[in-house]
Image (cartoon, rainbow, N blue to C red; front, top):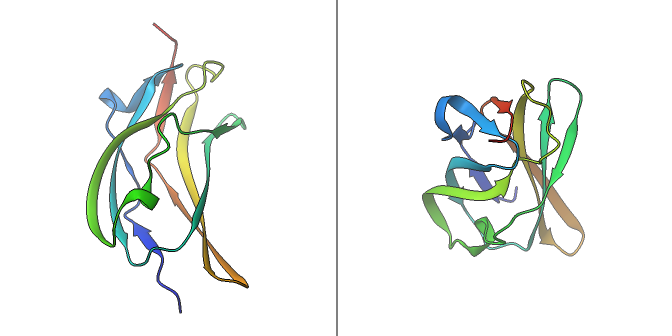
Amino acid sequence: PYKTADIVEPITILNSNKEIAQGEKIAMELRITKYNLYPIASNNTILCDNGRIYVINSIMPKGTTSLPVGTFIRKQESYSLPLDAEPNAHCQFIFQNSYKVNPIRTIIKEWKSEEFKVTEAK
C-alpha cells in the first residue's frame, strides 16, 4: 500500500457563478494532502456534456510536485479554457496523476472538479 496524494472532491471552481468564458483562466481551490515525494506525471483534461474532451496543458508548470509532504489549500489559475470550447456546455476539469512509486509500479489517481458552464469569450 503506497500513499501518494489525496485531493478533496469535487475540486472547487472559484469562477463567478461557476461560469468560465472561452480562453479564460480556470480558478480552482484544491485541498491537497501529499504523503510522499514520488516522481509524478500529470494528464489533465476537460470533459463536457456535449461529448467534447480537451487535453489541457498548464500555463504555469507548478503543481503538487512542487509541494512538500503535508496538507495544503491551494488556489490556482494554472489552466485556461480552450477558445473553441462550445458555449453553454457543462464541463468538469479532470486531474490525472501517475505516481512512480517504485521501478516496476505506477499508481494512477484521478480527481474531478465541480461542474462549470462555458460562456462566450468577452
